Length: 107
Length: 119
Image (cartoon, rainbow over all chains, first blue to last red):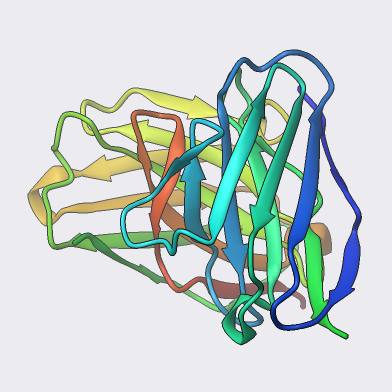
């Protein structure tokens, strides 16, 4: 199985901050990388596919980059509604696997 | 826009079979570019893919669960289902159904249902 490692596991930030979350794959996954946002008690919400393509309706302050083994999710200007846990997911090879999550908390 | 809704018992006894159904609305389960998946999340932990099915009945399972998992599809009722046998406390989790577009992304999710394994 391909292991997905996210860092940091949690971070504290303020509204207006620029936030970057990293996801590393245990082997090359090309650009088969997706990002999700999950708020407490809710289902994950799909944000970004193919490493850098924004899902329809997702605010443009979210962006993704990377290929191969190293990927980033960036929130350019953190908004109050962005405090949540973020997960990466690889779809390069079965089984599809998720990272352990990064919790973005209010400073 | 697709909507998905899980249904099934919230409590299952150890060694028994967990059974859940996902009802899809707002689109056809037979749509050619959609696959349909199950994902679970133990309390306070991360996400684990369980398996995915195509409307034709082709299935893909996580090897870690494959011996205990069966996913099936009912196109006439726009539903797909999960069965997980021989459950233990480690199977206690929120179970989500989701559309697995192009077998590469989970774009629409159900709200999730908590299944507790306990006697």
